[in-house]
Length: 239
Image (cartoon, rainbow, N blue to C red; front, top):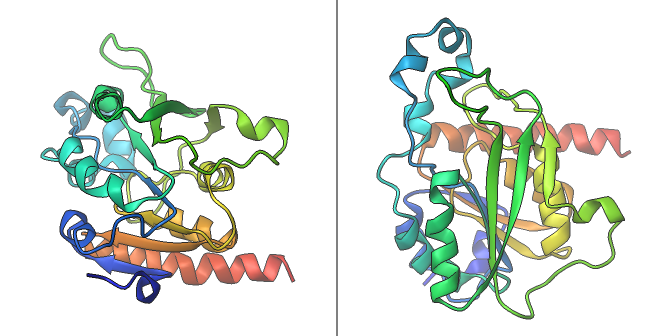
């Protein structure tokens, strides 16, 4: 069984399901994560001029796993958190997460990222300009009641960011807002699908501890570099 204190502010390379099995129950304060969306890039987009011009979509298939099982992940991960989970997902996955919460008699709520610069519309579909975050929690879970009015909105208006080496990073401002809402300083925040490291960077800037898990060694390297360079820049700006 892992000693959580030894894992604070580290990134573990590995399969999160196997790693999480070694964590004691209720060993972290919050889980905030962005698991695979179980989609692949449409072949029509891959052949389009737009797709070829949009470098950050080139590796979308390897970023979005096609065999991710939300239920298996939830059953293992939820028990590790004291204050529930914030899980980013696609529209198609919403029922997976909401049904889990209802079956367990947990509370749930939704938050939304509305993308100011979503991809152009193609092939008789509305813009894919919204991503969803399901909060699953129980009575007594921490909630910060001391923020400004605007901090409590359920939607975020942010631009899609193109980060070298990772096709789908979440905007840092969104992670700031969620971490401020649902955690306290020095809390431990776990991201089992750390990706390019946005959750970890936000935690460091806001005085929280992070534990990241990431299977892809390339993304682990990117996350560690971001932690070094973005925290250095953050420190210089605040001197």
